[in-house]
Image (cartoon, rainbow, N blue to C red):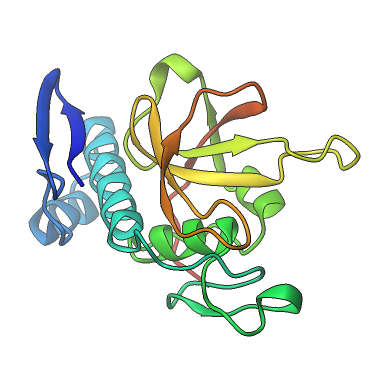
Amino acid sequence: MKLEFIIGGALFVGAVPPFPLDPVPELFQWCASWYTSACERSVGVARGRMAANTALSTLGTPYSWGGGGPSGATYGTGRGKRVKGFDCAGLTEYAWSQAGVGIGSSTYEQWRSGTKIPRTRIQVGDLAFFETDSKRPGPDHVGVAIKANQMVVAPFTGAVVRIEAIDRRNFVGLVRPARHKPG
């Protein structure tokens, strides 16, 4: 499978994203000792890329209702108890925990885990939220943006983690997770 990424206006096509898989320790160390708003944005972008890379590394993992968490794929609950994998919130929690940010284990917690972002300001790693059950208020489905119009998502029972379009009729909004340690 070939993936496309747009970074700084340049299009990259390949099987692996063109950004580093590991954090940039020098950037984090410099920012810890010398705060600037540009530094904060750089750290945020680096963390978003780390979360996106982690999500991409799970492509093909089975969907498991209630599965996944900060340490990776797990056996789920209920209808997911015999399948090791991720549900949507378990996948996003894992991706962001690997970037050093705790966002909570449910879609509802994750919706409140950072700053709401206008659709036109999407960045790699932002959380894309959807309303799939109009009987329950609040978004109940989430994915990790890998470019302006695509996300990695654990879609539903019987499927695997895959790339899907962000733009759809039940789109609710975007959240850029706030910087704090997983807990």
